[in-house]
Length: 273
Ligand SMILES: NC(=O)c1ccc[n+]([C@@H]2O[C@H](COP(=O)([O-])OP(=O)(O)OC[C@H]3O[C@@H](n4cnc5c(N)ncnc54)[C@H](OP(=O)(O)O)[C@@H]3O)[C@@H](O)[C@H]2O)c1
Image (cartoon, helix red, strand yellow):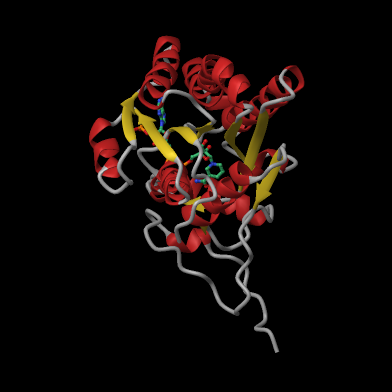
C-alpha cells in the first residue's frame, strides 16, 4: 500500500533496524514521509535504507547514551531542516523471575525503555513545538495484565513508567501529541529468538493465566496503526492493539518461534457454524 497521508512529514524512527520500528519506518515512508531511521546496528540500517524511498537517512544511535539521543535528533533536523514526528521503538525485555532480576537488568531495561525515550523526547521537543508535532512510543498491552506476566517485572515497570512519562510531557506541552501504543504480542525477531529454555519457563504460565490469545500479530498490522495516529488531525493519547484470536478450530502454528512453537498455541475453539 502506498499513499500520501504523511507527505508533509519529516519523521525520526528510533529503533528501526528491526521489528516494529522497521515496519513503522516502511509504512510511514510508503505514505510519503521523509524518514530518518536510527538504531545501533549500522549494517541493518543500511539494508533497510536501501528499501526506502530516496531522501531517507540512516543514523547510528545507542539510546543508552544521552549524547547519542541529542545527536540523533540534531542529525535528523540537519538532514531534513525540521521535524514533525518521532517514533520511539527501542524496548529491552529481559525475561527473568523478579527475584533473579539484577540491578544491571533493571538499569539496562530502564535505560533503553524509559531514559532513552525521555532523552530523545527532550532533544526533539523544541522542533516538535515549532511543528505542533507528534511523538509515538511503543508500550505494551502486558502492563494491563493483573498481575503482570511472570518474568516481566522490569519490563512491565519500565513500560508503566513510559506511559506516565508520555502523559507528563502531554500535560506540559498540549500543542504536541504524545501517543503510547500498547501493542499486543507481535511476531518480531525479538520474540522469535526467545531462547527455548526461557520460553519453556514462562510461556506456559502466561497461557494458563489466560494472557495469550493464541495468535501473534505481524509487525505490519501494528505499523498501520502508527500511520493512522500520525495522520490523525487529533491527538491520540493511547492505543491498545491486540491480536484477533484464531476463529477456526485447532491450534495456530507460529513459524519462526524458537524451541517449541506449540507454546504459543491458543486453546482450541469450536469452528464457527
Ligand atoms: N514484539 C512484541 O510482541 C511487542 C509487544 C508489545 C510491545 N512491544 C514493544 O515494541 C517495541 C519494538 O519491539 P520489537 O519486538 O520490534 O523489538 P526488536 O525486534 O528487538 O527491535 C527493537 C529495535 O530497537 C533497537 N534498539 C534496541 N536497543 C537500542 C538502543 N540501546 N539504542 C538504539 N536502538 C536500540 C534495535 O536495534 P539495534 O539492536 O540495531 O540497536 C531494534 O531496531 C519495543 O519497545 C517493545 O517493548 C513489542
